[in-house]
Image (tube, rainbow, N blue to C red; front, side, top):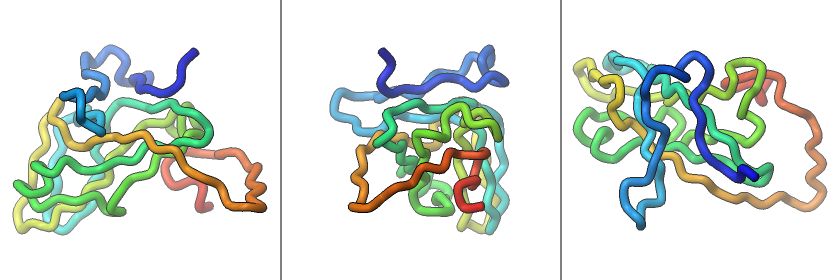
Length: 148
Protein backbone atom coordinates (compact mmCIF):
# COMPACT_ATOMS: atom_id res chain seq x y z
CA UNK A 1 0.00 0.00 0.00
CA UNK A 2 1.33 3.43 -0.96
CA UNK A 3 1.26 5.98 1.86
CA UNK A 4 3.15 9.07 0.59
CA UNK A 5 5.75 9.83 -2.01
CA UNK A 6 6.57 11.36 -5.37
CA UNK A 7 6.12 10.42 -9.03
CA UNK A 8 7.01 12.11 -12.30
CA UNK A 9 4.12 13.62 -14.22
CA UNK A 10 3.53 12.14 -17.66
CA UNK A 11 5.34 14.88 -19.60
CA UNK A 12 8.54 14.34 -17.56
CA UNK A 13 8.38 10.56 -17.10
CA UNK A 14 11.41 9.96 -19.35
CA UNK A 15 13.30 13.18 -18.51
CA UNK A 16 15.83 11.44 -16.27
CA UNK A 17 15.22 13.77 -13.33
CA UNK A 18 15.66 12.42 -9.79
CA UNK A 19 12.65 12.10 -7.54
CA UNK A 20 12.89 14.15 -4.34
CA UNK A 21 15.04 12.61 -1.65
CA UNK A 22 16.39 13.44 1.79
CA UNK A 23 20.17 13.88 1.83
CA UNK A 24 20.79 12.91 5.47
CA UNK A 25 19.04 10.72 8.04
CA UNK A 26 18.05 13.81 10.07
CA UNK A 27 16.84 15.91 7.12
CA UNK A 28 13.15 16.84 7.33
CA UNK A 29 12.83 17.94 3.71
CA UNK A 30 12.94 16.10 0.41
CA UNK A 31 15.07 18.07 -2.06
CA UNK A 32 13.13 19.06 -5.18
CA UNK A 33 14.95 19.94 -8.41
CA UNK A 34 14.06 22.21 -11.32
CA UNK A 35 12.85 20.27 -14.36
CA UNK A 36 13.99 22.95 -16.82
CA UNK A 37 16.44 25.81 -17.10
CA UNK A 38 14.61 28.88 -15.79
CA UNK A 39 15.45 32.59 -15.71
CA UNK A 40 13.92 34.60 -12.86
CA UNK A 41 13.62 38.28 -13.80
CA UNK A 42 14.20 40.87 -11.07
CA UNK A 43 11.03 41.86 -9.25
CA UNK A 44 8.97 39.17 -10.97
CA UNK A 45 7.24 35.96 -9.94
CA UNK A 46 8.29 32.90 -11.93
CA UNK A 47 6.90 29.36 -11.83
CA UNK A 48 9.69 26.79 -11.84
CA UNK A 49 8.50 23.41 -13.15
CA UNK A 50 9.52 20.34 -11.16
CA UNK A 51 8.05 17.58 -13.33
CA UNK A 52 6.73 15.79 -10.24
CA UNK A 53 3.54 15.23 -8.30
CA UNK A 54 3.06 14.02 -4.71
CA UNK A 55 0.65 11.52 -3.23
CA UNK A 56 -0.26 11.38 0.46
CA UNK A 57 -3.02 10.55 2.93
CA UNK A 58 -6.23 12.67 3.00
CA UNK A 59 -5.23 14.38 6.29
CA UNK A 60 -1.79 15.43 5.05
CA UNK A 61 -0.25 18.13 2.89
CA UNK A 62 3.16 18.72 1.37
CA UNK A 63 4.76 21.97 2.53
CA UNK A 64 7.09 23.53 -0.03
CA UNK A 65 10.03 25.59 1.28
CA UNK A 66 12.73 27.34 -0.73
CA UNK A 67 16.25 26.04 -0.15
CA UNK A 68 18.01 28.48 2.17
CA UNK A 69 21.24 28.61 0.14
CA UNK A 70 19.32 29.53 -3.00
CA UNK A 71 17.36 32.20 -1.13
CA UNK A 72 20.46 33.82 0.35
CA UNK A 73 22.69 33.66 -2.74
CA UNK A 74 20.10 35.04 -5.16
CA UNK A 75 17.63 37.03 -2.96
CA UNK A 76 14.79 34.64 -3.82
CA UNK A 77 11.73 33.59 -1.84
CA UNK A 78 8.53 31.71 -2.39
CA UNK A 79 5.85 34.21 -3.35
CA UNK A 80 3.49 32.84 -0.68
CA UNK A 81 6.11 32.07 1.99
CA UNK A 82 5.30 28.36 2.04
CA UNK A 83 3.61 26.40 -0.70
CA UNK A 84 0.82 24.03 0.30
CA UNK A 85 0.17 20.98 -1.84
CA UNK A 86 -3.13 19.39 -0.80
CA UNK A 87 -3.69 15.64 -0.98
CA UNK A 88 -6.37 16.05 -3.66
CA UNK A 89 -4.00 18.03 -5.91
CA UNK A 90 -2.50 14.66 -6.97
CA UNK A 91 -3.67 13.64 -10.46
CA UNK A 92 -6.14 16.56 -10.66
CA UNK A 93 -7.66 17.15 -14.12
CA UNK A 94 -6.15 20.66 -14.47
CA UNK A 95 -2.46 19.73 -14.56
CA UNK A 96 -2.03 16.15 -13.27
CA UNK A 97 -0.81 17.51 -9.92
CA UNK A 98 2.35 19.08 -11.33
CA UNK A 99 4.18 20.86 -8.52
CA UNK A 100 5.29 24.31 -9.65
CA UNK A 101 7.54 26.39 -7.40
CA UNK A 102 6.37 30.05 -7.37
CA UNK A 103 9.50 32.14 -6.74
CA UNK A 104 9.95 35.92 -6.55
CA UNK A 105 13.33 37.49 -7.31
CA UNK A 106 13.98 40.35 -4.86
CA UNK A 107 17.38 41.10 -6.40
CA UNK A 108 18.34 43.61 -9.05
CA UNK A 109 19.61 41.04 -11.56
CA UNK A 110 18.14 38.00 -13.26
CA UNK A 111 18.77 34.71 -11.47
CA UNK A 112 19.35 31.56 -13.46
CA UNK A 113 18.23 28.16 -12.22
CA UNK A 114 19.64 25.18 -14.07
CA UNK A 115 17.79 21.98 -14.90
CA UNK A 116 18.47 19.54 -12.07
CA UNK A 117 19.37 22.26 -9.56
CA UNK A 118 17.84 21.80 -6.11
CA UNK A 119 15.35 24.65 -5.64
CA UNK A 120 13.03 23.64 -2.82
CA UNK A 121 12.36 21.15 -0.09
CA UNK A 122 9.11 19.31 0.46
CA UNK A 123 8.03 18.29 3.97
CA UNK A 124 4.96 16.13 4.59
CA UNK A 125 2.70 17.35 7.41
CA UNK A 126 -0.41 16.04 9.18
CA UNK A 127 -3.14 18.57 9.91
CA UNK A 128 -6.20 18.78 12.15
CA UNK A 129 -9.80 19.65 11.28
CA UNK A 130 -12.06 21.99 13.26
CA UNK A 131 -15.30 20.87 14.87
CA UNK A 132 -18.16 21.15 12.42
CA UNK A 133 -15.89 20.93 9.38
CA UNK A 134 -18.04 19.36 6.69
CA UNK A 135 -16.10 20.20 3.53
CA UNK A 136 -17.15 17.70 0.88
CA UNK A 137 -16.44 19.40 -2.45
CA UNK A 138 -13.83 17.82 -4.68
CA UNK A 139 -11.04 19.61 -6.54
CA UNK A 140 -12.04 20.78 -10.00
CA UNK A 141 -8.67 21.85 -11.39
CA UNK A 142 -5.01 22.56 -10.90
CA UNK A 143 -2.97 25.41 -9.44
CA UNK A 144 -5.15 27.77 -7.36
CA UNK A 145 -8.39 25.97 -8.23
CA UNK A 146 -9.80 25.72 -4.70
CA UNK A 147 -10.28 29.49 -4.50
CA UNK A 148 -12.55 29.74 -7.54
